[in-house]
Image 1: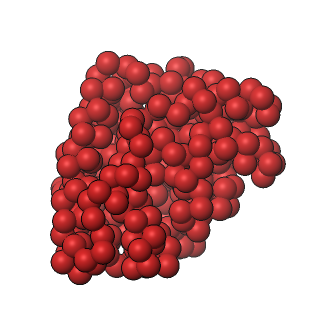
Image 2: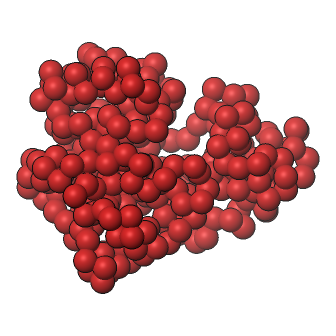
Length: 280
């Protein structure tokens, strides 16, 4: 039975709790699920308890914000690694930077969406939760500026749009090395997406593989068929694993839990190649 290796909960920018993500995965017939909230592992304890209750595997993970030549590229780190000293410090710095960036984006958007306020958006980010553009999107939906999160990201919150603000994040190569040093497995998230494709050339992926990268997230909603074929071939040439995931965010986005999955044998290979990338 397959696994969904990329999901988000209310610990970052999802709309369902960590336990609800796990229970939904069990109801969907998945053998296991990875909780990969943005720059935090705060939801993993709750998710692990739910996984034991419903009898499926939880693969602990985190989606790490990184940068390549000024562009945002995300890295999935699998394993119980978020509490390791070096990585924890980097993640905490990224989360702090995200808070300031959220306010700046809202202030820019105020010129075209006068009903949007910083207070409205901040109220949607509970203490200890990683803030992100989806929280702004939810506020835009609430005031009727857009019909849903995806519409907000298509225009007002687009990375190449006039209201985008970057935030502090480690370099991608540095992040791969940190995950590997922590005993985790590093997989580039949606490498063919609009934000990553322009900077992730084959040469850089080869450099990442030499630094310890384990895989590429090939089967993802952002990738069309030709992109999947190209990424799968690249992974094969470099000895990397090809994974598949939903990038589930609950009701906030149209991504469906389990819409793309990873076979059990690939998950086993992913975990075996880390030593510490164990299920909880």
